[in-house]
Length: 474
Image (tube, rainbow, N blue to C red; front, side, top):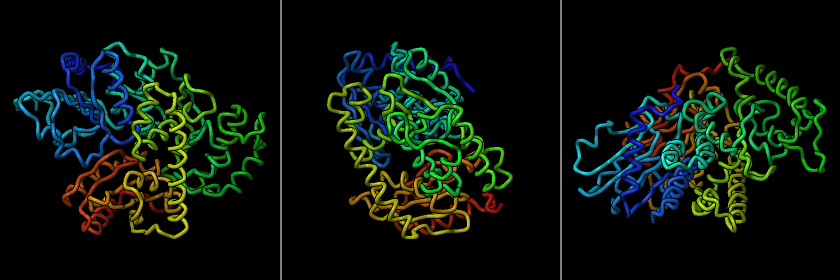
């Protein structure tokens, strides 16, 4: 894997720097997720520091096809490669794209048009954009050309938010190079630990109950998790008489819990998956050392959830303020938005889980998410996977918006399926495009947009595409 910027990529970053330094009218478009908001925050900070006035807008992919190009320089981050964003470019337009998703255009595309378009896509340089670098990482490498290595921690946040550590359990490739920068700056600490969400803030017995890659006796069962902790002599309260979190445990307390989880999972999975079981339980974790210990901003996974809460509740301004360090009132607002986000998710998950809404097909399972906001249906899909069959991907449908009757599709699956080599992002793109839609994403989390009347066709095609690829029996 590549951990040093390839020479050609370095040249392109120097070109991007020159273009930015010479521009006076700049607009940034970035994506509506943690990676996108992190990318936008890095770019906006660069422009602030060099004294460039600019606008920034966080957008969904579906608005990019007919986006007007009205500024001297338009920068797209964490999006743009898979969309015809230059459709309305003029002769004097300048466009920079920093993206890690599969590109529509060849790298030489700039030579075929009469305006300037510089696309820095990871895949052009032999870098895996689903594993080795994300949008935020690409934007950080631009910041590095300006000498702003202190923004490296945001590149790590972006990578974790984009789940780039999911397949290997750690950050690799260029992500690891960025991690080293962040460590050298004294901003990030990484260590191997139990792979549970909520290390800093979630009570341990609750965190264990949310384990969903494989359905275990403890999954969605807090009584069982309490019994497990009692069996292992792990206390429920810490020295401050607060609920014990994972971050409170010593390594001597963690080792028996790790061994017990490995045993439990091994009993539930087909032999084929046994070699992957430790990767479900143990992974590298990332702490932001400038954040207060015991808060949700200290842990990269929890921080990324907070950023997603902002953009998915139409408050990207709060996320940008937090990431750029303007926190006087932003942290209070972030707490309010995060709380409302958690409440909304919990209500919908409870309704879906208790209503038997998950419908089984031979090779997939799905639920009708009508009424659920399209920007959170993927999050909900991931969280109700534990109510279904972990051996199959789960798909959620909902209408894009009141104005757009197309369907937004989100797919989530157990990490075991990704370890086995299935890339659902590629499959969902192929199926959606065959029906007049579009899609893509990562191996364990992806999505698509399709016409409303193509729902059944989509399900049947996806089901057929997965025939023989899943291990459905022990």
